[in-house]
Length: 120
Image (cartoon, rainbow, N blue to C red; front, side, top):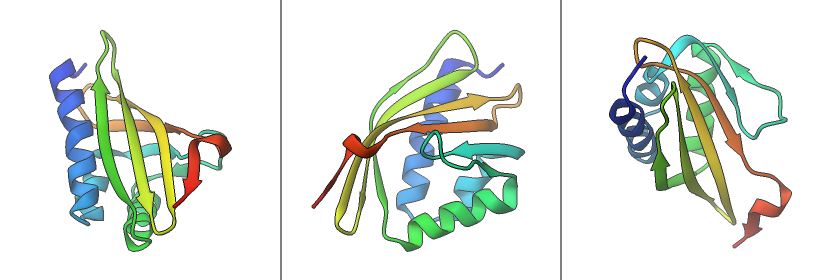
């Protein structure tokens, strides 16, 4: 199991790489069979190729992330309060990442819904 510092650093690196526009490096943080549910309740994105496309599309849409708070756990999960800005839209939410023993993300769940975004 990865230590809490690794999990927290990975979440911060995720936001930095996303904002740098490097969808390949963001996808490299994930295991090959990882799953993204963003937002929770929406159809999951599964596997490396789909994850890379998900981030490429998000970056191409002009999204930017801010990691406001990152928290670890005694287990293999870490959480981050984030905001995302897209042209004309601001989202506030929570992301939870689950890690495998090698320190790769195997699942990312983003918690945000209709009352967590606003037009700007």
